Image 1 (spheres, helix red, strand yellow):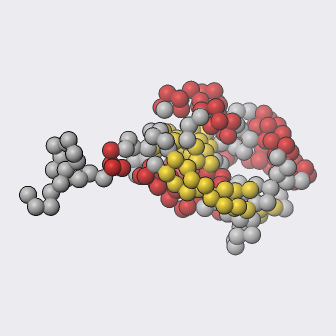
Image 2 (cartoon, one colour; image 1 turned 90 degrees about the vertical axis):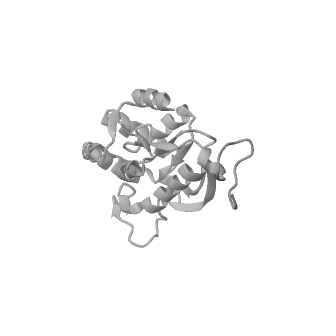
Image 3 (cartoon, rainbow, N blue to C red; image 1 turned 30 degrees about the vertical axis):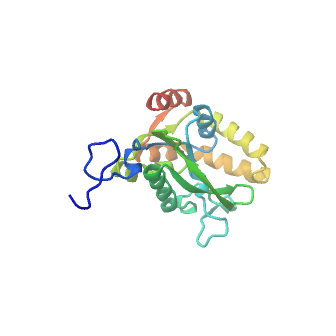
Amino acid sequence: MDGVTSEPGSDALFDVPPHSHRPVTRFVLLTGPSGCGKSALTRRLGLPTVALDDFYRDHDHPGMPHRFGIVDWDDPASWDDVAALDALRDLARSGRCEVPVYDIPTSRRTGTSTLETQGARVVVAEGVFAADLVSRLRAEDLLADAICVSRPRLVTFWFRLLRDVAESRKPLPTLLRRGWGLMRAEPALVARWVDAGCRPVPPAVAEREIRALA
């Protein structure tokens, strides 16, 4: 039969692209308040992880929202959701994608890096805006789970402050003002993420359940 080819040693009638044999990659979306322990959790898991916060826009991007005297980094308008979703699609389809490298102290992208799944069937996509991608990944059958890391507000406030001071993210008065505002807003934020399709669970439970998926 003219034009018909097959893989060596197989009974297939047509050539099959190599990537079609790769197991489907799906994502665990991991969200929660800033300082709740998302990054520490992903380090313990050791799975390929997309840091969705690296898709923040530069601080001087036109139309950035402001609050507490600075850019409101907790407003979805400060984040490039389209680029983040495109990167996840690339990762699911080809096993690799290009992601930005974001410098928090200067609030600016400084380059890009390549992320690969290394054959993993489950990849974690972690960030404060992860819930915004739940419905879109589910519609494309790329969602494995959606989790909101939840713990007492005062605990989150304290660990967020320690982290931000240690990393010199912003001046201390700004960190305190922002941290207090985030603590007060946390119940509403968690409720919004739950409404978007995330399950609120403590860090230890989240770790156990993600390991079971992987």
